Amino acid sequence: MFKFRAISFPILLGIFLLMIFWKTGGPWIFLVLSGLMMSALALEVLRMLENVEIPSFPKVTGILTALLFWSVSLGDIWPAGKTVVFCLFFLLLFVGWLALLRVSDRILFLKKFLISCGTLIFISIPYLLLVVIYHSKDVFLAADGTMEEVRTGAMNFLFLVLVTKAMDTGGYIVGMLSGKWMPGGNHKIVPTISPKKSVEGTLGGILFSVGTALIFYACGAVPVGTGIGWCLLAGLVLAVGSFAGDLTESALKRACNVKDSAHWIPGMGGVFDVLDSFIYNGMLFSILLMIRF
Image (cartoon, rainbow, N blue to C red; front, side, top):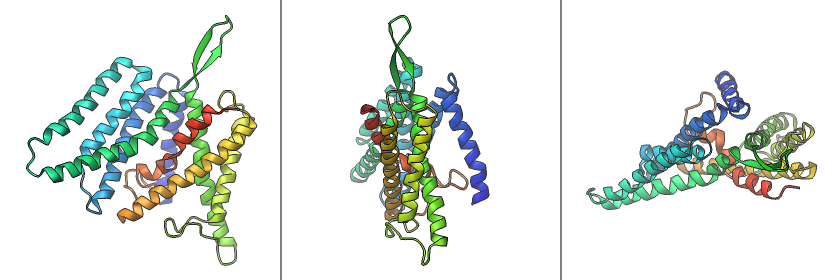
């Protein structure tokens, strides 16, 4: 497991850094990757539901999810392409309704159709906010006195990702060490949902997230208009959001009787296993950006 993760992680990290720091190519990498990953995520959720005999249209839903994310991303870098992709999205969606006229088992078709649409919404709303954050801009006063829009979303996205993932890393490290060193092991926090999570690991993860936010502050790489107090709050809120997202995915997997959402990424499982921390954090970070201080 570790050797596969040791291969996957550097590759994912390299792609991620290109998205952040390559000004011309980064948005295109983000465009392609976001659509493909969200398509895979939708497939994973629907396949998990099929494991407990909840029917759906996984492949069509995966295509629709990719088109939706591509249409949002293209709005910033290629507006004409956004219109084309958005039209394709609605065309496929309406074809689904028209198919109701031709199928023999309409009840089964409606079940599959509505489960698929519900999953599309379930996946899209939390993660579309990540796309909005990545492409966001801030307004600055230029030297000539005019107002100028500057794309700051990539660095804000970097802050969000690293502070969120610091919770996972810190929780794993502190939880593992406390389990070995404490007499009788550590204290489990939600054993019915995620048996490996502990109180000690959770507190350690929170400290890692807050510490990461403070490192950004020390480096002057925080969102525009924010100070140390905002960074402390962001570290705490994003740590809690990461923890809640992880538990949400664990609850879904337990309900569907699966261990990993999929096996797309060697050593890491599925896309949902990697992105579960962001189920709530896209929304939470968007709110934090509205209350900068």
